[in-house]
Length: 623
Image (cartoon, rainbow, N blue to C red):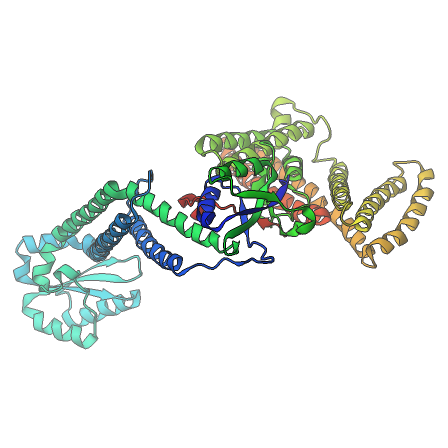
């Protein structure tokens, strides 16, 4: 449901403006808007002192955020248990010093990481190099490290070396993830001049040495590579250890300073919403009606001179009010689904309770399998214990639990346990109808659900618009009635109701058509035909459900389709796994579409503003 909002006005002495804003931050219930500038009032002007303070706050915050960013890049977690804010001067000096130190550590870490990555290119060749150099091979052979960009270049080099040197060389290669190839070329020392001329003429690229070894010759660098790689790894650990020490020593103080300066910036921004005279200020905003007492209590701490008054509803537009949703615990998780759409306009209807009722039901109608429902229930339990309260994962766990209950319930009604496995193994029978055979009954069920769903949406629209748009409300109600009459007429045509009902139904429809055109305009007939088309869209429930059960039946038949029982069971399980994956995602998408397009189209009014109360800054809300 949409929480009732109240627009309020705060009036007090101008000298108490900042204290009032600080109290409002503590209350965290007032959504500020620009105050009305009436007679004697003008927009509050930020003085030069406040502008200087803002520049100072922004500069310090820039240093603080740079420190936190550097810690993140260094893989260091900063303790976040801020206490009382430090003195601003000390906090500014600390932030500047830590920004410089962490920038130095980060630059060092990047340099070392680049060198480590360069050394790791040669790591697969270390054993070959150490074997050659340690056995005296260095005196007998010349060693070259080459870098080739493609497989074609490698093959061309092999062919050229075979022509030039015959078998008097050794070529060892290592492919890189980038697609390049590092080549270790060994030739007799007596042919060094010849191979140098050959490589220069062929324009073969030498593999670059790591930065720390770039000033040495290849003969000196090669033996030191493995030792240098280990040294780089140790230096990287030392860099992160130094960063961890800084975070441990100054993390709490830095977090407190971060929150303090962000709060100061929020307060400075809030001042710009005020209107003021030479001696007084005015603030206006929205507060949930249930939190008005909390707001009054916070203002009493500022002083009795702060007056709070409620602005009459006739003086503001409902469209301007921000929207706060509050639903019972049973419905609240489904706000995760409705949040994918814009907020409903204030004064309209929150669709969350309807989604909470119909989404799991429709999902269960489609899946309708005890076995799949039990697997979803297990997933819901696992998500429940693996997630934290108030997180998206916890909401998803509750939604999964709800759809699993309906899937199990309809599974018993259809007589399905992993398709026809329940019937074949346990003698399970449908309590209502068998979807594999009663396709027409399943179609009637799906379309009937669509009629109920859309008629409900039209009734909700009529009830919600009765006070504001009487003609439109009557039109919505009349459309719902016409839809019911069309359904009853179809029941008569198919001889499910007595034929004597047909004449009065047709007369009622003929009378209703011109009335609805008068009420809603010439497009009313087109809208009604669109709604009839939407009813037929619910047939997708039948199509998805039938496909699901038939895939499960096919999976069960695979057990006897192979000569080996083990192979048949393996294929059956694989097929059930694929069908279960489809069962999770396909009904979710299509049932959500039935809500978002067909159902919401009857009553949903988007356009609500986000409720953003003035409050203390926190890193969780900032991300």
